Length: 138
Ligand SMILES: [Zn+2]
Ligand SMILES: [Zn+2]
Ligand SMILES: [Zn+2]
Image (tube, rainbow, N blue to C red):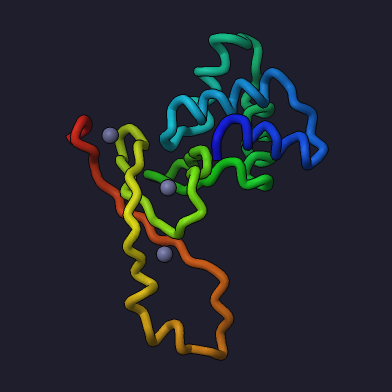
């Protein structure tokens, strides 16, 4: 997901394209890593000092619904990042300090033949993440 696509997705779904929404998407696009709502708020307050957590959360929920961002829980905190710019199936290595991610194309589901053949259960998705520290944060 790139900035332009994300903004288009807002428009296509009938949501107003506000300076604040665009500002948040720009931050996600620029940072390209997992961010907490607090980090987003701090970045946004440089431009909008009166901005509330409420507005941030409301927009994050909307971005999640529109699949502009993906989220995960890191260290007990919900974090968000702009959705990857590829439709190829992949997973992430995630740095627990800075939230940076790296792609891995290997998928553990490929090895889980017994799960895939459990045909009384309809599998629609899975989640797999590897946590650690990037070279900068080690
Ligand atoms: Zn990715
Ligand atoms: Zn890091
Ligand atoms: Zn997978």
